[in-house]
Image: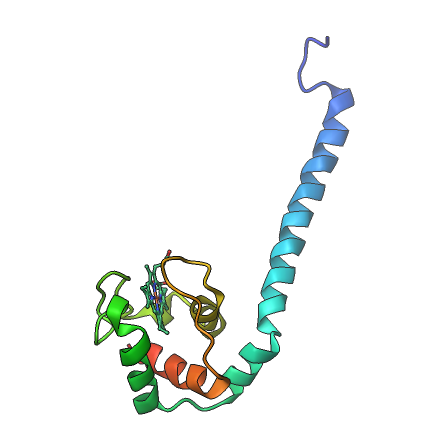
Length: 123
Ligand code: HEC
C-alpha cells in the first residue's frame, strides 16, 4: 500500500473518471431537457393559444378536488405563482406525466392542455 493517498498513480484515472462522470450527467440532463423541449405534443400545445375561461372550467372539473377551486391548495399544493418556478414545458410535463403521485396522469388533447396552461400561468 502507498503511504500517500490518493497516490500519483491513482490521481490520473480518478480525475479521468470524475470528468467522465460529470460529462455523462451533463449530457444526460441535456438529452432529457432536449427530449421534452422537442416533444411533438409539448410543441403543439405551446403553439396553440389557450383560452382562459375554458382553462378555468377544465381546472375546476379535473384539478380543483386536490388543488382547490381557485388553485389555492387542498390535498395538492397551492398553484398560485406556480409558473414562476415551473416553465411551460414543465407545467405540461407535470400534468401529463403522472410522475408525482397521488396526482394522476392526465391526457388532455392539445387544445385543452393549452387552455389549462393559460389558466395555470394566470394564477
Ligand atoms: C389526486 C389529487 C390531484 C389532482 C386531481 C391533481 N393534482 Fe396536481 N398535484 C397533486 C399533488 C399531491 C402535487 C404535489 C406533487 C409533488 O410535487 O410531489 C401536485 C402538484 C401539481 C403541480 C406542481 C406544483 C408545484 O408547485 O410545482 C401542478 C402544476 C399541478 N399539480 C397541476 C395540476 C393540474 C393542472 C391538475 C388537473 C389537470 C391537477 N394538478 C390535478 C395532486 C393532484
